[in-house]
Length: 141
Image (cartoon, rainbow, N blue to C red):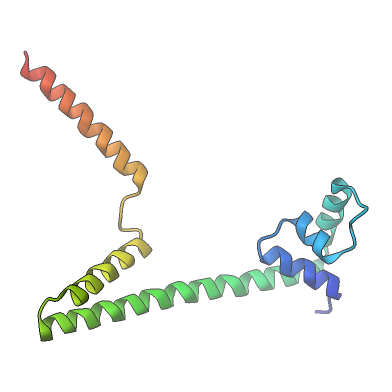
């Protein structure tokens, strides 16, 4: 795949999270262009089959790296949890090993979305408040 250096710079900026307009401004001399013109040219550039193919290739690479990073984080946390557990069994509970053990469990739970989100907690609180009001109301009857 043979892209120009400017096309590659445009793609790299897009993959880094920049907008099409920002990426185009970084890669090309667009100082005298209107934003509408930049937007049109950036859109047309991304429609180019070679440019689009390279963009998709880089996105896939980044996706795989992100999955690898998450997997590695989970594996490391499991390792830390197990080592802390071994230390607790061998040497007894101490602040350092118990804190490490508990924190690794919390992080693993967070990574695996085991904690309910804050919105659900707020809803639960509202339901408890409503139940409390209803209970008090029925006690008076």
